[in-house]
Length: 338
Ligand SMILES: NC(=O)C1=CN([C@@H]2O[C@H](COP(=O)(O)OP(=O)(O)OC[C@H]3O[C@@H](n4cnc5c(N)ncnc54)[C@H](OP(=O)(O)O)[C@@H]3O)[C@@H](O)[C@H]2O)C=CC1
Ligand SMILES: CC(=O)N[C@@H](CCC(=O)OP(=O)(O)O)C(=O)O
Image (cartoon, rainbow, N blue to C red; front, top):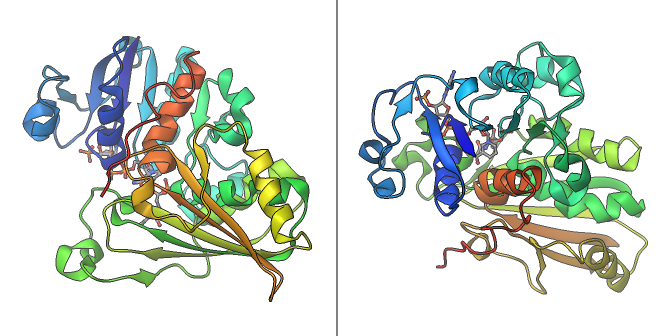
């Protein structure tokens, strides 16, 4: 199988290359980057010497030359490229938000562009295997979830599905800086980012419509989330702390979560709050569930690697499912500790 990675010089593209380097039965035959076009992968990123010695970045991806596509591009260029892959009859996992939200208004409102292919938007499958595994198996277009939505939806799904939440849902989430991509930005310049932590977009972040859209699709009811993201000065890692009111006791809510995810290979329950380092470099989502009986609020805390389960390893999980491999193939290791 010949594989193309568009946007291979960004953080999610590099992470994909790292994971795919362990696959024996595939060939990565195209990688794209405009700025590195014509340069060898190993000259740009010396740590890839060996496995991918001959790969050369190209300006764009040729649809005819590969069988399967991973797109690690910004949202707007993805809209077009996904459409072209789809028309060729081949399969694609798109890591951008271009096909995630089944609501065209969200694109004008939160992404600043008119979605040109609403009919394809409704054919794309949301690539969160724990919720949509059966649809992913036969999908041509898989829209890989955002990192905050992965951490938040996995932390809410059992409770939302069973309808045990009373009232508001509050999510406070922390993200490592690689979540903002590799393009240099002033606020992520070392002297400014080192040692600093802060909330941002406290009232409306573009991941809110994505989360609400998916939670509505699985529950059938309108669900609102009060979501506040925060930057933490680490390269990778994400924590979501979720609180909601419920009449279930502590034991019942813990049991509900454990039962729902009992066969999930990448969900691990912890009896203490998870750390970013417990999942770093991996596809795991660690979950802690408890209830504060004093206030009646349940507390669910999830940890993922934003570049792992929040992006690239989740894209590989989808690839494994779409290509008939064991879902966990090559994904059960990878933790980098300390
Ligand atoms: N970082 C993260 O934690 C997560 C990211 N995502 C999403 O995944 C996608 C990739 O993210 P990430 O790897 O962080 O981004 P980066 O900014 O690190 O990389 C973007 C890649 O796309 C290329 N690119 C940028 N602009 C264009 C363009 N207009 N046309 C063609 N190629 C372009 C860049 O190379 P060049 O400029 O040389 O062409 C680079 O290879 C984004 O849509 C992001 O929202 C999703 C979940 C988590
Ligand atoms: C730290 C940081 O800036 N994170 C990004 C989200 C991560 C991401 O890339 O998500 P999408 O794929 O949905 O764009 C942000 O808050 O916009």
